Image (cartoon, rainbow, N blue to C red; front, side):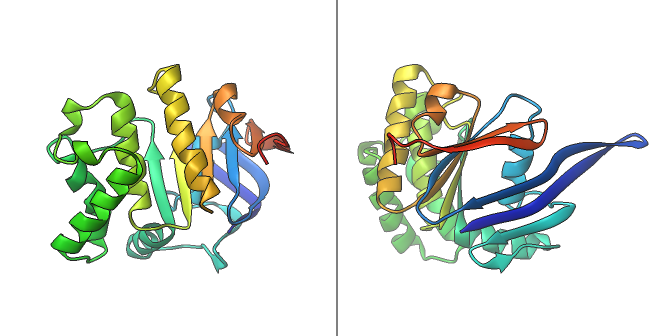
Length: 228
């Protein structure tokens, strides 16, 4: 599903370069539930941006669902993102003046789905995350956990191949974090490939595989046998 080979990424800083990713090799199969762990500056956010087609790598190879990703223009990248990837962010990234239903249906609008059909599909996914009764509420009327569930429904609505979750519990208390992780576990049981970026050990331990990054290098890659 996802394969990276000898991946490098640097950013210019004045006359110098900051080498952020240093020859990463990683393979994630369909249906895996993987966490990428690392402290601030480890390269995990840069890796997520490359995997999410929000940034380009400098060297190496990135293959998504059998397709080599290289030098995409923004239009092609947007089409692939919409087709293959669903995103969940720490800050939820909901549109404040749109209801839960409107937020969830938005990716379907960009996919060209008609209004009636996209509202029907969006409602199905809100019910999947147990928020059907909140369909007409604005984000300002919801708790952090509810907002993250709306964000998960929005990520799922286009039926992507992979969910990329960037610190999905970072803004939540422990009880709400557990509820959000349970939703991700349930989705994974249905066959969804999920990649979670986190710096929280207890969150990583709930996934089936932990990849640890430090200074742009993979230090370890371990299966969680009790979760497999």
